[in-house]
Amino acid sequence: MFAFWGSTLTAQIIDGAAIAKRVRAQAAEGAAAMLAAGGARPGLAVILVGEDPASAVYVRNKVKACQEAGFHSVLETYDAALTQDALLARIAALNADPAIHGILVQMPLPKHVDPQAVIEAIAPAKDVDGFSIASAGELMTGLPGLRPATPFGCMTLIESTGVPIRGKHAVVIGRSNTVGKPMALLLLQAHATVTVCHSATPDLAAHTRQADIVVAAVGRRSTLMAGMVKPGAIVIDVGINRKDDGKLCGDVEFEAVREALGPNGWITPVPGGVGPMTIAMLLMNTLQAARAATK
Image (cartoon, rainbow, N blue to C red; front, side, top):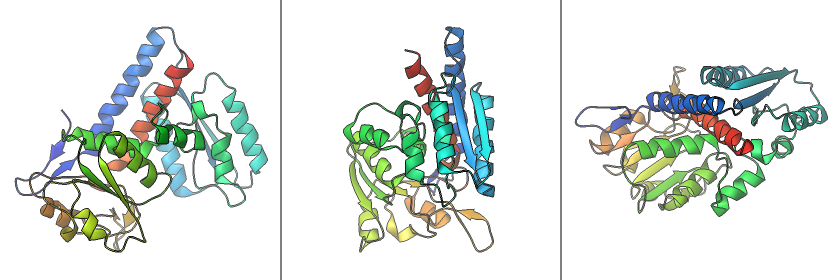
């Protein structure tokens, strides 16, 4: 069973940390099964360029998750002065390395490096971030492929509630290439009717009040408030912001929206909701890539 908690009067909280733990255990089981069958150990290479503190934390967490799941992990760190050509050359070498099944270049990159050029340099079969044009095309056309980890994790959280997605009205707030657009496409594939809202949407609340599922992914506090949801909806909060006191918060006014959703609703917290799922789904993508490489 997946983990939820909540009172009898407010929405149940979807425990992303507990669900991510289960997904990571599944990834570890998959890796062990590959080895037991004489296959390769799933391998992920993570590249960090520069000394951004937040990026360093994310990278450490990804490498640690790989090690705990029994994956082969490679961490390469470079000075911020690393040239784009040198970075592309290193990616080319990893593309050719049979022990590496997934390549992740941590964003943001230094200003002199074109992030899209870096993303496109990664072999599509090793694009475990799911950000390349090839990966986006596979998602758009419904072909099998590596899905962006955060939207992939959001889908797992929604599915964990046991509420069927098919036939539901989903509203995605945000249209980024990394979350908003792929999120909308994944919901479409699950047979939801999808509305995408953004900064130019004139009356956001008119859309969200009709939604059975709301995914907030704009990176702005108080984007979704209590009067903007209907009872019984599922709310997934992708945002990571900080309150005036420095504490983490999402795009959703958590306590007020939780109360407005009522006992039949579901909501993810920040932290402890979507965040843990991103790394868990990255492991699943790496496992998928390793399986595909050894067929």
